[in-house]
Length: 148
Image 1 (cartoon, rainbow, N blue to C red):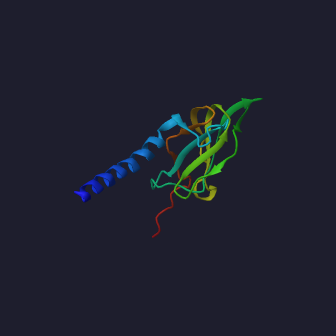
Image 2 (cartoon, rainbow, N blue to C red):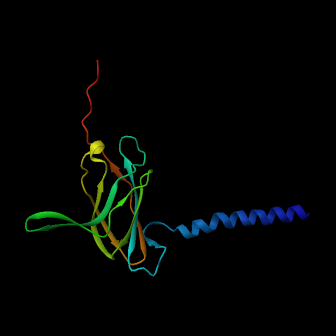
Image 3 (cartoon, one colour):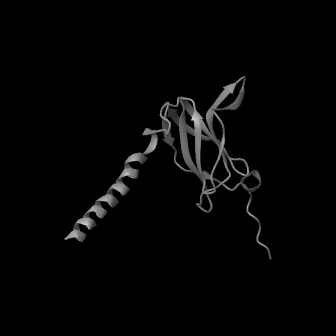
């Protein structure tokens, strides 16, 4: 009888332990940044090697706007660029509230070559976390001929 009550308490504690992180994690662009008093937002996502489908680390990622000025197209970066973790995850912090149209990804040029900017439509509010879909990084090197 005593062990039955103990088992019920243990089961209840396990359910709470599972439910709390799920409730706190939220989903998508409605998350609140860890410091909700901050006047900036966060963009999160992941870069993936298109050939292997594995996360791709050490990729520089920045958010901003592509604008045309004086006939020249230029990228105006919002805040700092951040490097992806070894598994391809990134988190760009300190983004001023506003609307941004470009995600710039810059992997190792020796391995992947230049990547086209990703056209996005991100509207971010103060204290908000926006989670983007994974970005595929394409191998820019031509295939090597078969060796005989």
